[in-house]
Image 1 (cartoon, helix red, strand yellow):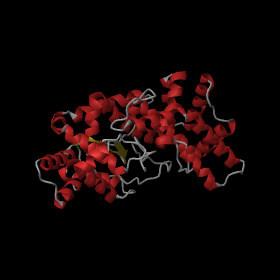
Image 2 (cartoon, one colour):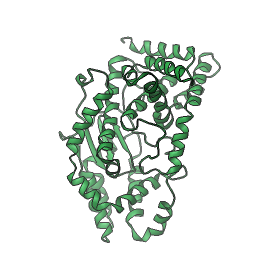
Image 3 (spheres, helix red, strand yellow):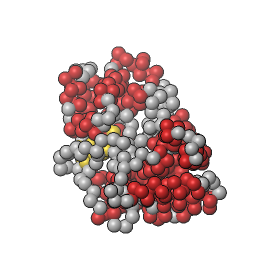
Length: 377
């Protein structure tokens, strides 16, 4: 299952080479949000429920809407045809009566490790079908402009003083239909509209604020560091801080009993991985020290970058939540974008809590790498 360690990855495209993806800016209209793609999808869903399945031209028109078109531009490092195939097949399974037996088989089992990518789309569209009238009301009456305003206000509570003076470019949120996720990249937010409904008003504000937090983090990083870096250990630390700090907004506590539409198998896997974080951090430390001692080559050392499980959500939550619980939330905020300080604060919290702390060799490595990145080119 390809989604095993990317679930809930509200994916980023932030500079400095820490996370590698295109930095091309995508032009957007002046409005802060667009529901066009969600509206078109719902029109197709209504027609299908009334016996008329979408034509190829209908699909071309859907994927030509601004939301989908922008999404495929931003995610230009992935195969847009695979996204389109999963959306089309998931829709057909959910809304085509001729495939009811196949649909029943998919929705009868909770989404889990053995689920295919297509299953996540299918299950989400199945839920869409069950509440289509409610979703129609939601998408046409919700004040999404107010949601964006509240999200901008909320995120500042989780950022250093003065963050509101940073030059955050205009952000736009597109509501569309895909798997039950939210994603951000290149200054644009994409939110599955069924997930937005599922989150509820407060959850949606927090979800958008989570995405805005990533954009502010990019500004904080760019202000501090002046060079690119592909060091594997630092990549893990960056991802862990990025997701852990943003998860303070819309998660806050662990373990969790719900992950959107995902089933209990994935919730258990997620929680188990969170509690295994000390072992993951020990592995990160060991790989780094082994590489520095000449016991591992550069290719072997790249495994250190993988010590940010669930793209940093579980391992990052563990590190950030531990700092918050032991030293206070301000201690987390004060070291945002300052990765040596993040490692030092984590060690301080870990020693206080009696859990795994990084070795001095690891701490010095992160200090040294980041000092080099701060030097003007």
